Amino acid sequence: MKRNDDFIQEKVKKVFTADVPDVYASVLSDVKNQKGQVRTMKRKNTSRKTGLIAAMAVCLVAVFALVLGVTMFGGESKASAIVSLDVNPSIQIEVDENGKVIKVQAMNDDAAEIIGTMDLSGSTLEVAVNAIVGAMVRAGKLSEVQNSILLSVNAKDAELEKQISDRLTAEVNKAMQESGLGAAILSQSVSDDKELAALAEKYGITEGKAQLIKKILDLAPQYTFESLVGLTVNELNVIINSKVSVPDGVTSTGTASTGAYITAEEAKMKALEFAGKTEDEVFDFEVEFDADDGIIVYEVEFDADGKEYEYEINAKTGEKVKEKIKVKQASPVVTPDNFISRDEAKRIALAKVGLTEEHVTFTKIKLDADDDEAEYEIEFFTLAEKFEIEIDAKTGSVLKVERKAVKAPQEEQGDHITAQRAQEIALEHAKLAASEVVMEKIELDFDDGIYVYEVEFVSGGYEYEYEIDAKTGRILNFEKEPIDD
Image (cartoon, rainbow, N blue to C red; front, side, top):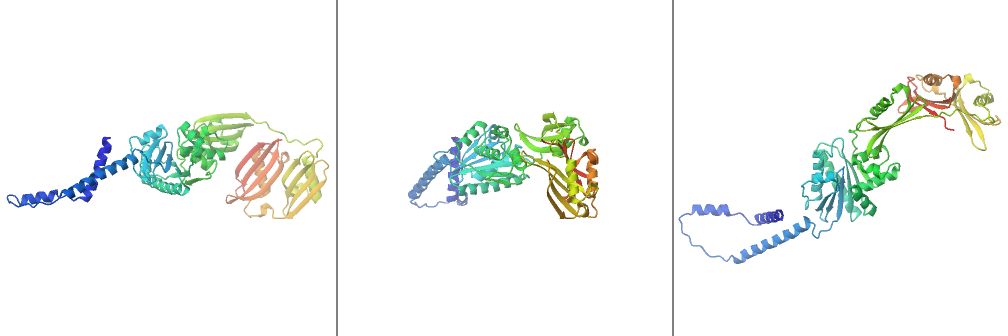
């Protein structure tokens, strides 16, 4: 209680210093100047004034004791809002209707270290938040590679929640900028909820962080609460940006830092190293940012030598977390005995329009079959026309013929390679002859600012897909997958 008594005395001293002039120095001067002189002093009636001042002093001491007892030690004050800050330290702040701090609570060990011996009771909410953010920066909890913070507000009405949220967002941005950092802030309102309270108590987090995780799970049910609760707010923010979207009711400002992680290209090269493969030996590459068992990982998948490789790479260290290799079962292209073959369907289609194979480029030959009907969908083009033909797969009769006058892809731009050349490039890469494949698609498209040929064909139970730069002939993308029955 001594600190409190000293504090009260200091407050009273300030009040009296402001209200009563300090005349000690001038009195002392007068005494020195008039030394040796005898002056007759007149008696003045000061008892009333002295009594009034004494009464004021007693009242002020009582008032300050009452106010400080309420604001600094909780007393009878009732929280009008509860604000929580989550980084990895999770801290909860209770404030009264005047915006003064009643109580600051550490929700986990990291938070206890941040609060330390700070006594923020009686300060404004802004001062408290500024002090806490500053302590997190000094402790390295907020940094260039960990710059996200979650602000959650539970107040008596929506308008007050928004006011507090807006003020604190500005305060955190200011505090981070003063530390030379850019902030990524997630802010939300939180209502009283027994389930959130139970989760917060169980995992040592705030109800605000529990609510954010539940909202992420609504958008990405492949995760579990347990797999996300150990992540920092920055890691959750990265997941939001890369895997889902900003949940309803959450406001996001700034960009979550990914500076702590290796790049997707580095993760890809790590996976190849673990598999003992070179980039030229594999295809169907997929690299995704993800979370698993409380850590951020890259999921890397690719095919090679008839096998499917799957890796999880620790996004911070580059270490292998999981590895899975399985043999792919290729399914051959099977035409039922009672159906005509693809080659026969092609011949019928060409005969119907009076053309031969050397004058056309096939872009699609697909068998579409169900329990009742089966038909071939065939598409091809010449220099002047595009054809779409449907043929009964059982009888060989022509069901539909459509022909349109269009520019062939090779005439779109004078400096483009031809569709025939794009087909040759794809076949050379696949090490296949034209007679060994069924060409399903050759199409000129405009993608990401350049013209590309999309080439698709089937051979040996596999589907091949290529994207080829229409100007240079360079292969931009390649996929090879077994045909699903």
